[in-house]
Length: 200
Ligand SMILES: Nc1nc2c(ncn2[C@@H]2O[C@H](COP(=O)(O)OP(=O)(O)O)[C@@H](O)[C@H]2O)c(=O)[nH]1
Ligand SMILES: Nc1ncnc2c1ncn2[C@@H]1O[C@H](COP(=O)(O)OP(=O)(O)O)[C@@H](O)[C@H]1O
Image 1 (tube, protein in one colour):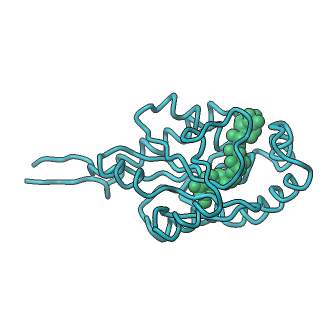
Image 2 (cartoon, protein in one colour):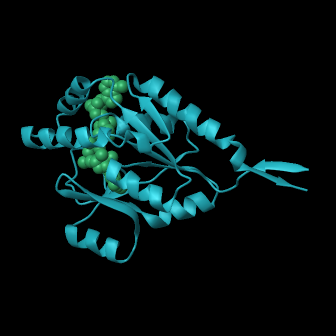
Image 3 (spheres, protein in one colour):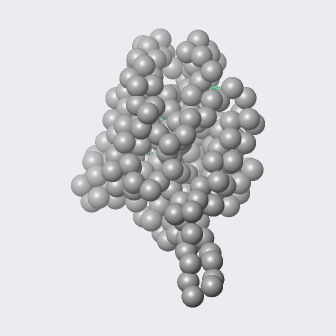
């Protein structure tokens, strides 16, 4: 008898409201788990100070983004507060096939689409300890005007309602603790009985 784990990598979805700390937790997680591949999204949003094309996002014009949708180059895409965001297909499929796990840091609408196409993906909802803290984090980041802040908080109220569609919830009270929880989830998922492959 030979036992081994499934050789295809796992698709991990880290989602949750804007400002909860998805980017921060993902960056810290990649330090803890360098074997985890991170999918860089395409967006029509303007780069923030310090953001680099191909590192934080692939920055696209609306025309370029629409062409990517047309060519089926995205596994999911969503319009979020006036901009388009989407996950390039090629990198995700190639990396999973090579046996590496891939993490997507995407909004709740996108996570919903991924669930339809990749039902075995691992869905994690990152939750702020309180709404007040969520607001403070968005304000603290200094990236929003009063109007876009209000839009993001409104979107968050709808996003919380989707929490039951996720496999796991991780409260982002402290970055390191949240990372430990996500790491524990990924490691446990690798040992699930339905991931086991037995041969003679
Ligand atoms: N559906 C989808 N959402 C994405 C993607 N990339 C980023 N997002 C989400 O879009 C929202 C806005 O992202 P961004 O403007 O960078 O703001 P921030 O995440 O709040 O810093 C966030 O909820 C992101 O997680 C993607 O490829 N697909
Ligand atoms: N656990 C935490 N405690 C305090 N501040 C945090 C925590 N996680 C993230 N932050 C801060 O909150 C803000 C939003 O985080 P960010 O990673 O940009 O969120 P998201 O990617 O979900 O929009 C940033 O200023 C970040 O430094």
